[in-house]
Image 1: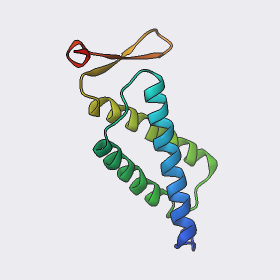
Image 2 (image 1 turned 90 degrees about the vertical axis):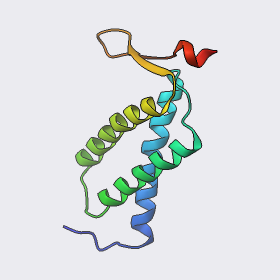
Image 3 (image 1 turned 60 degrees about the horizontal axis):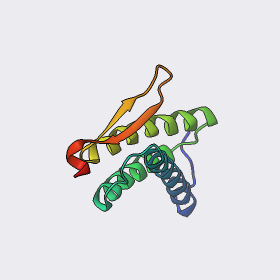
Image 4 (image 1 turned 45 degrees about the horizontal axis):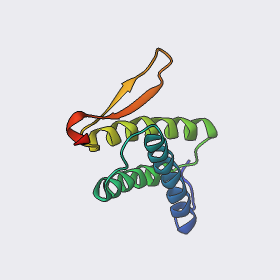
Length: 109
C-alpha cells in the first residue's frame, strides 16, 4: 500500500532515518578506532543513505522491516567506511565478532 503522504512529512521521515543510520554508523566506526570519513565521502554516503531512505518511505513499513533496513544499512555503511578510510583496516578480535580498527604503518607516518 502506497502512502498518501508525499510531502514534507515523508521527506522528514526519510531525513530522520538517514541521519540516524549514517550517524550511528559513523559514531560506531570512530568509537572503534576508525578514522572519520572525509567530507566528500560523508556527502556521497549520506546522499546514498538519503536516497535509500526516500525509497523506503514510499510505502508504509512495519517495525520489523525498519529494523532490518537499519541493520542492512549499518553493514553496508561499515564496509563503505572501511573502503573510504585510506590505510586503515578492520580486524576481528575474537569469535564473538568484536572489531578493532587500526591504522596501517603507511598511515601512521
